[in-house]
Image 1: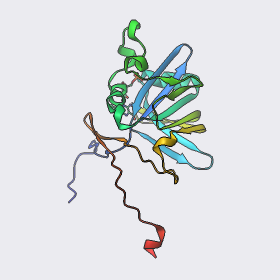
Image 2: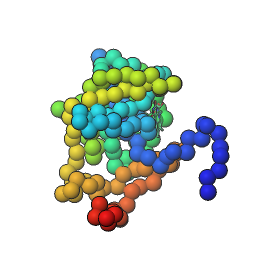
Image 3: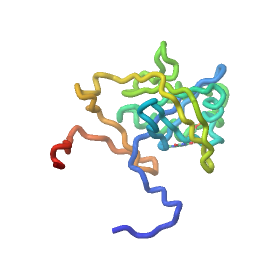
Image 4: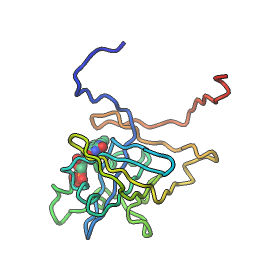
Length: 185
Ligand SMILES: Cc1cc2nc3c(=O)[nH]c(=O)nc-3n(C[C@H](O)[C@H](O)[C@H](O)COP(=O)(O)O)c2cc1C
């Protein structure tokens, strides 16, 4: 049964965590974002909320481009690491979060993480201030997926890390229940 609590009860997880990649000038970065969503199918739009103090914010605002990556559960530690480490805090000798966390990118797609099962490349078409974050609305210019982790109906068959909050993750399983439209007639 529901019980009333404060307006700051951030109990809306479980949810997936997107890794936002961005590059501007000679600086690249990656950060965890639990606040991300599809916004439109036609045109394809994807949104992510980024706090203005994040190092990634300046890179996305400056370049007008961001990547959205989803990594499998085998990489949950790295996912969390991108949300705990900030480029602002790294000393110059280790100031690359990707290499620090063992993440690599594709040679022909610098914002795509090599081990991602899904990747979107987005061009910022709108920036909407929302309280202490900015919503970056991205037009999806490119999508890549790992066919080894999808079935012929494009349903994900791998294990995804699902964020529970408080640095904790569980994995999706391969058990499924499907409720086809006909079952509601
Ligand atoms: C699981 C998780 C989800 C997060 N979601 C968001 C988010 O949606 N938006 C945001 O601005 N920060 C989010 N953060 C915090 C940033 O990822 C964190 O501040 C990160 O260190 C920023 O890195 P940067 O300063 O190098 O850009 C999240 C952190 C974690 C661990």
